Amino acid sequence: MFRNNGDSREKKKKRFNENGFSNSIFDVKTMDEFIERLKVVFNRSLEEEIRKQIDRLRIEYKRDEQNAINTGITARAEEKAKEWICPRIPDWVSSDILTVFGLLSTFLVAAGFIFGFFNRYYLLLVVLGLIFNWFGDSFDGSIARYRKKTRPNYGYYIDHVIDSIAIMIFGLGMGLSGFIRIEIALAFVIMYLILMVHVELVTYVENKFKYSFGLIGPTEIRIIGIFLTIVMFFLPVKYYDIYGYNLTQYDLFTSVAVLIMFGVIVYSILSKGIELDKIDRKRWEEN
Image (tube, helix red, strand yellow):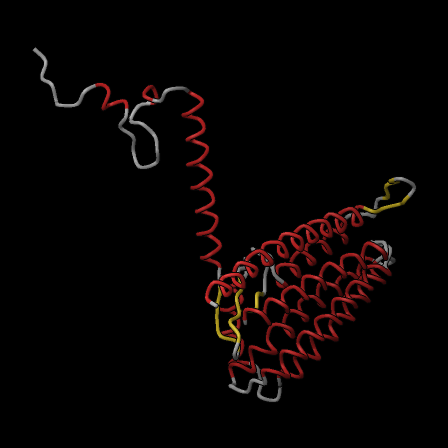
C-alpha cells in the first residue's frame, strides 16, 4: 500500500547534516547530546563571526621595512581621514613639528586634569589636548610617508621615545589631580609601558608593528579618555572608604582598566611566547 523510498529507519537515524545535527531532534539519542552539539556549533559560529568582524576592521600597510597592523575599531576611519588630511597639510608643517606638537599637547592634558579638579571648565583642556595629541602622533609618520620623506631609524626611535614620555606626563597629570590617586595613575602608566615594550619586542622579532590589542589601540584609548573627561565634567567626585582608603569613582574605573591591561599583558606574553617557542623548535628539526 505504501511505497518504500529505499531508506530504512536505521539509516534515517544515522543521517546528520554537515553541522552534526540530525534532520529531526528526536533522532538524537538524548537531549543532552543535542544540547552539547548545539553549544559546539554556536561557539564555533560565534568565534568565526568575531574573527570575521575583526578582520574587516584590520588595516595593514607597509611602514618602511615593517608591516604595520591595526585592528582597532577606528582603524579604517582613521586611514580614510589621513588620506584626506595629509594632502591639505601645509608644506611648512614637517613631521618633526607634528611630533613636538603631539608631545606639547600632553602638557595641556596634564594641566587640564590638575586644574580641572578645582574648576571643571579646565577639563576642556583635556579634551583639546587629547585631540591635538591624536593629530600630532598620528600624522607625523603619515605625512612623512605621504611626502616620501621617511627616516625609518630616526622616526622609529623618536616616535616611541616621545610616546613613553607622553604617557608619563599624562599619568602624572591624572595622579597629581584630585580625581585619581597617584599610585593608581602610575600603575596605569606602568601597564601601558609594559604593553609598549611587548609591542617593540614583537616588532624586533617578527618585523610586524601592531598598533592595537584586539579592538583597542591608542586612538580608542584617547576616545575613552575624552568620554571619561566629559563624565568628570558633569558628575561630582564621590568618595568611597575601601579598607581605610578614600577612593573616587575614577580610582575604581582606572583600577579596573589596570587589571584589564594586566590580563592582556599576561595573555599576550604567554601566547606569543608559546608561538615563538614552536617556531624556534621547528628549526631544531630542520638542522
